[in-house]
Length: 104
Image (cartoon, rainbow, N blue to C red; front, top):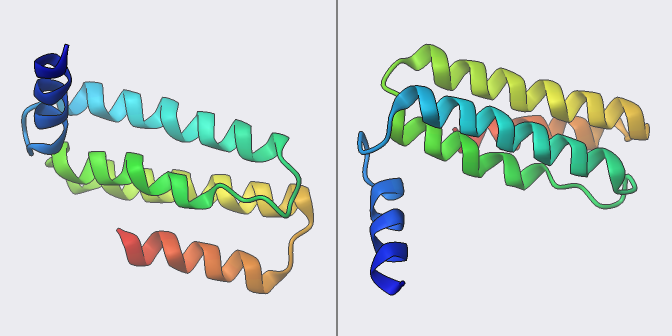
């Protein structure tokens, strides 16, 4: 069991080991799940930092920049929709958007 987990983590953390299309689809599902969970929690609890994990996976395994740019746009759109839904301040929205852009 331990070797299987180590092998999986090695493949996940090594650039080019996974199919770019599979990673892209998994990242879209992951970001959509984060968005759904973020909408369920009150506005004081924000899960915006969790968008960084799918973006990191996309950066490691997707060679085409358009995939990463699309992921950044999707994560930013989800955050803006969440901020609009919860009625958060402009400062919070700006800070969270800058965090996603800076991390990518």
